[in-house]
Amino acid sequence: MALANPLEKLHEEAVCSICLEYMSDPVSIDCGHNFCQVCIAKYCQEKGLHADGPFTCPQCREAFHKGSFRPNKQLANIVESIQQLEQRTGKEQVGALCGKHEERLKLFCEEDGEAICVVCRESVQHRPHTVYPIEEAAQVYKIKLQKSLDHLSKEVDEVKKSESLERMKAQKCKAGDS
Image (tube, rainbow, N blue to C red):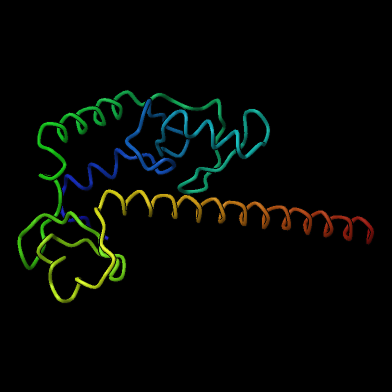
């Protein structure tokens, strides 16, 4: 999916895919993906494997070791610059505009699942709908997304355990045939 503008792409690259916030003390892992140092360390701790790993990257599932974190000072500087730029221009300046009214998209329509402007809110189409500020919607969906991610991680762990058990059974069968 192509992003609307380069500023959105830059914002996306500066956000940690674990906490969904701007990266703090970003580190790179073996596959080249970057995360907040605290987030990836917590991720490793939650996986509860050997102290040094191997672990799988939360984005691409490639193996890495906890001891291989490399501070990414360049990315830290970029994140800091983006935050300063947003403070200077204001987040509203970066926001998208309504296609119908050329107003900033400040609200979120729950029923339609889309960002809308204040003028759209008063329209017949959205008036009966549940609408709230886009920042609140982002927080609600962030929590929902994290819950889904946690659930999926548990499912992946269960599948891995089952797979391991099946491999062990297969090895026992092979050993018994010998």
